[in-house]
Image (cartoon, rainbow, N blue to C red; front, top):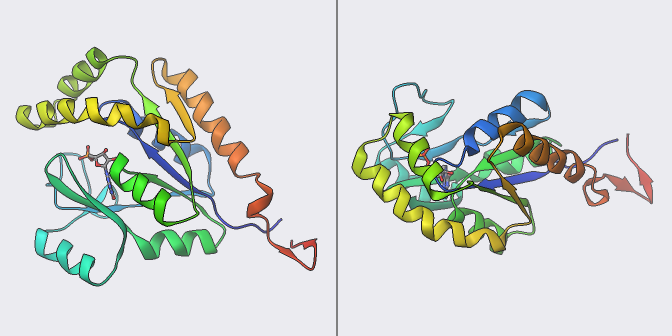
Length: 201
Ligand code: 5GP
């Protein structure tokens, strides 16, 4: 059956395990692709331009804002991050599902300004776990970790604005939940291509 793509918006405080869960989904579901964001943050050692992010400077970012290239953008933990409008809309039109791993500000902008999206919040089991995961990752400067932990308190209060909350304590259990959400949400009647009352194949 032909259908439109579904937009999935996933947010979580830094260190909640969101990237791991997103990568597991992308590996299992071939019709799901990842929206590669633009950021002014510098790449971490294992990150690749064009795969993890498009790493650009503040001037290039500003020029994309002026051209209307972002579906949303926000300042997060001291840097700018934005979602390419073209990439998302093109995917959905082609019937491909798309996954946005973005912060709570960006997620709420899309929710308020469009009728699109399934909103999933990943909750960490505790602040202690966040603290440990961020330090164990060993890829973020200490002052930025502290900022991320401070912001986590504010972000955690935002779960009420999402459609689903997945607690990431035991990874397998969290993955079962998020993959079930993906499967159910891609079966929605509203996504189907219907002409003259008939499903299109
Ligand atoms: P990180 O620097 O750890 O890769 O990401 C920091 C935060 O920025 C995460 O919460 C991540 O979800 C968010 N983020 C990544 N891309 C975007 C984006 O395009 N827009 C917004 N608003 N947030 C983003």
